[in-house]
Image (cartoon, rainbow, N blue to C red; front, side, top):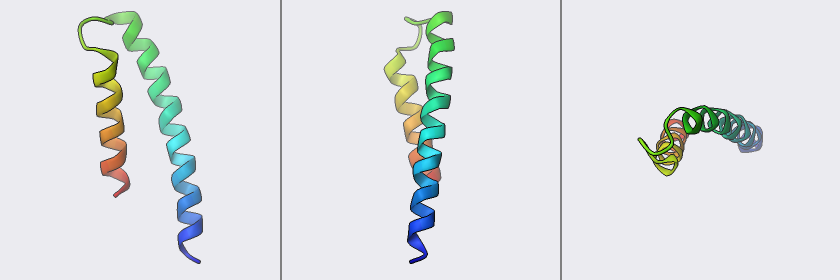
Length: 54
């Protein structure tokens, strides 16, 4: 019973994180696309989000 609101909040957080990541990615890609690959940025953001949710 108590798990459901937490899961809803988690889904909400994921959407927020995705939106933030998209905005950050757009800024980074305009500044320096080839200096650090976009994949590396996405991976680090994803890794931070996963470790933070645990």
